[in-house]
Image (tube, rainbow, N blue to C red; front, top):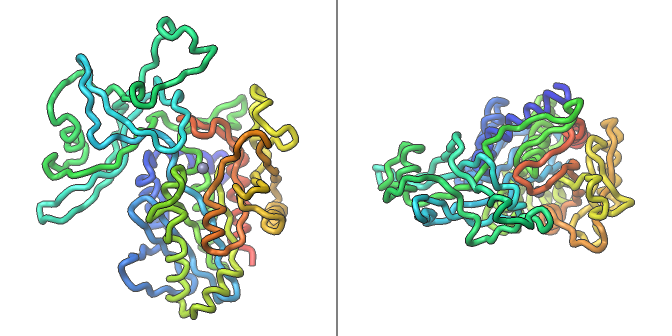
Length: 430
Ligand SMILES: [Zn+2]
């Protein structure tokens, strides 16, 4: 596939993944097509060398891996980490608000979205519902409304005269509820869920739903060299990692290669399925046990392992020069970015940085180095916590993008192809 085909595939991947639950479902479909076998955390695992497997925890985090031909205590794990969630709006437990002749849906803010970007967009809902089956069991099912269902209309400029001078400020409690209907019926929301899911409203007990933008991904620019969609942070990294893993899986590489895609990064990763939880360490240890390694051999394997934490980076936007460190600007379509921070908000150090540079050179692609302005607080990633928990050497990297945490983010076509190339080298290199 050329770079355009790879990005079109990424846009399709995002368009079929309107929630973290759906992102994992999309990933499972692709893994299934390539012969990966699902493992159940509740069952004993029997793994073989040269095998292809995946494990899901609570529907929205997934770890997929291929077992290498070389013994783990000699090769270690090659891990690519990224996250399946994106900041935005989540539906409140009792969401329906009747006001005058309109129904609105109450929302809670998830992570740190740019709220103003959610106004005047064709929004809808996706996520998971839980229900009691006719046999009395608690079950869950994904739900995805494909039509635009919700809207956050802006206030007209005639009532908000200073909006262009002061920016759009939205009160988080009062001004975020989304308009959904002019029908003031009782049991509105559960009936809505019943119609979409086919499960009767009396059986539906709970849900986790997020708001998503129904606009599909697009290429833009005079040569169509850029692309835009929601959730580029961080489904673009998940897609690049998955592509690299699938590309190498037929080659039966020596390394045991792992892609770990976690939910809950945008809210701090502290959960059963977040990157700061036990999921990755549990899976790595169980791979070792199933392949017959002792506890000490597992520790040897960890000590030889390497992790790439892939999350998007801030590309230079020339309209806002003062927001950037002037000597560390990173540019769209100029290659993956190595993220560096002396306070280890990013986990890269000189050795992991040098190893990533070496892989970029082997892949024949450019790379860039990013440092945040010293007078603005820096973001973080899953890199520091996973490397601290596992003791695995890690580098933080990511592709440059504009408008991180906007409802509509954008990035460069070439960079996505570069990232897939370097991750393929990482997985195949002995
Ligand atoms: Zn991110």
